[in-house]
Image (cartoon, rainbow, N blue to C red; front, side):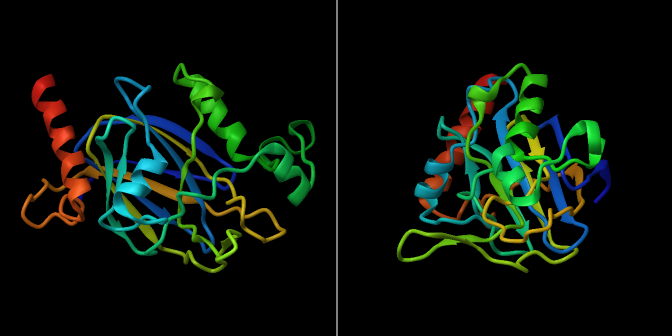
Length: 239
């Protein structure tokens, strides 16, 4: 599949951009132990955005992998997970803050370390949101690719080390035009004491057409089908 665009997000880095519908976005971990956090908004109306509670409730799951979709708060599908070599991506762990990062990895400053300072998810997201005319008020729970976080019977959350291997890849198919914001910062529940710095490649290509009879995301459950029908109706009416 011919790549339309490709870039690498270094450990601690961030990026944002608009990706049209009908694209395949493939994220590839270039070393072990990656965690890439995503925020997702409808490009033409950012008040419509990824809704973690509805996404998990509708698909009866606490983690996301091939066959799952990312639903908006308007009941439409923003993107579908069409390929995932990890089998588990974390939608519940959230993002790091400066206070957490300083406490866990040590205080670093721009004046001392420049671009080698330890960055956090909240600050990375905030900068990219402002660049798109949004603000910290538009922050929401992200999807953490390549990370496995689960809850035990007492409600405690645990990060599974070694879940992501070098070369693991996750591919999304865009179902709406999207504003995508990414932060390559550690998962808040990662217990490693050294700041993880794993580069992740992003590649965008044309997606294969949706085959209604055997598409794993459309046919995953009746709730997915309804969300797709809402999305198709939006495109039909918009023209």
